[in-house]
Picture 1 (cartoon, rainbow, N blue to C red):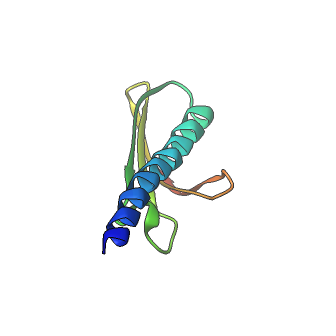
Picture 2 (tube, rainbow, N blue to C red; picture 1 turned 90 degrees about the horizontal axis):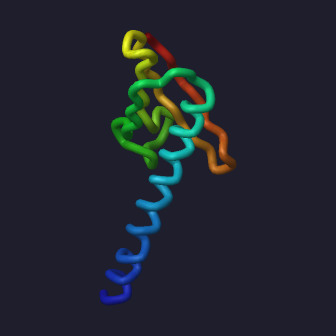
Length: 89
């Protein structure tokens, strides 16, 4: 039981750091591909980064010049790619 709790205590911080790293990849992608960003929000979608299926892992909302709002779902790959599954104004 003690070894199980120790393994959980190690896995959770590593997982949190990994999720933060994935989120930063999306932030970097957005800043590279969109200009004049005045607001940016990157949140987990329903099941977050470990959710199965359609690639809707992060919900991204950004504003450009405080008058145009863009929302989309983004997914990251293990090899550094960021994929946009849907974009809307």
